[in-house]
Amino acid sequence: MRGGTSTWEPVGRTVVGGVPLGAYAPAGPSGRRPAMAMLHGLEDGWQSWQPLAERFGDRFRTYAIDLPWHAGGSYAWRARATAAQWVDHALALVPDEVSVLVAHSMSANSILHWLVSDTARQVDAIVLLSPFYHVRSAPVDWAMFDQSLDQFRTVMKDGLRLRLGDRADRLGPDLVGLMDQKMLERVGPRGFLALFDTFISSSGMDLSANNVPTLVVGGSGDAGINGPRAEELARDLGAADVRIEDGLTHFCHAEQPDRVAELISAHLRRVPALSPAA
Image 1 (cartoon, rainbow, N blue to C red):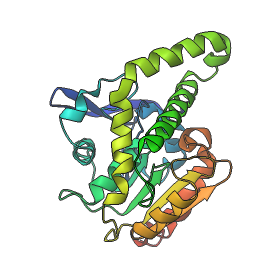
Image 2: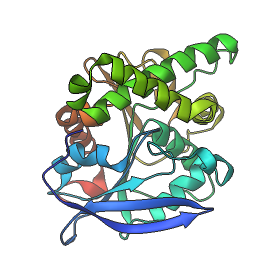
Image 3: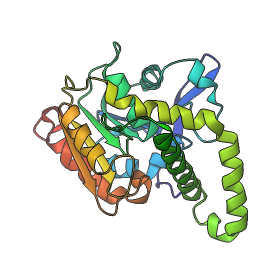
Image 4: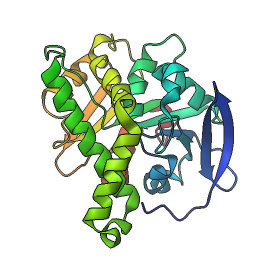
């Protein structure tokens, strides 16, 4: 993973039920810029936000949260709090009032759960990158389970290669394949079930009351959000603008940060509280 040019530093840490969380931000004064909080996906890490965060440093004070579902972590967090509660714990680490909330994959699904919780706070804008959305008419059966498991394994392997960066070529396919196997063994059923549960329960929530301007971004080749899943989320989620584009990957925030930044910037310019004249 190639990070940005800024030096990042910890700005908040806590332990909830024995599970550590941390918040990081570029070093230096925050000024009067609004705060943008960034929440990573399953088996990822706060560092993955650096390429995208660099593109917003002139307008926002960016904060990347290290969540319980970071790469290499324990899945004990599932017994400690719900996905929505972990979002609350994450936002509590940000020393400024959060204006924009950006979340990827597992965290994007967690935000959907958070939006219908009793503790959701008001923010000016939300951006959901590569969520997994369940179409209500699709049966939750063993065929869906097996298909989702195959997709999960593919995404996990793609994420590992992204974190390895140029090292993947130097290590060679045999060693990287062994690393894939070890990672999937460590993540185990608990990791998959954590994501699968937030996926199949996503369409069971009433999201129509959401009044926060929300942008959903995904790739046309991403099975979790393309086609009818994107169409149903657009209908279900109030105040939503769903953009599915060719060329965007599941890890678009890290692999196509320029295009994702363009989409987010255009979205934020339409938010009254964040418009240049505001």
